[in-house]
Picture: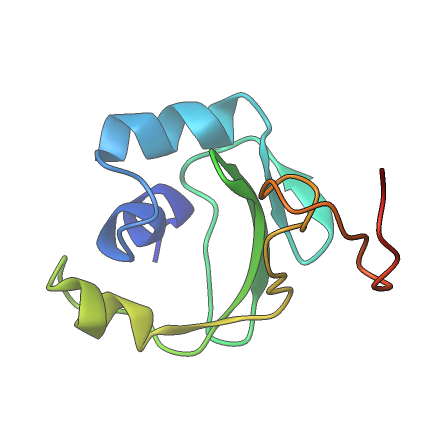
Length: 103
């Protein structure tokens, strides 16, 4: 499956042209390598790193979807590898990740 189509099917981009632009501009990494062609083939087991508005998302493709279905169906096709919770300082909390209070 093409990487641009996969990003759209997995609901990681709103439209396929947006997915094509992200790939074409070199923002996506496939198994650690920069991808610049929207027609690059994706297989099960591949690892993708993509920048989103909330940060970088690293996922492993578990299955190739047959359609752009509901969000629950799309999320079952990949596994998030680098899931980080919100940074307490950015969330408005005055504690560091180690639990030290700041003034």
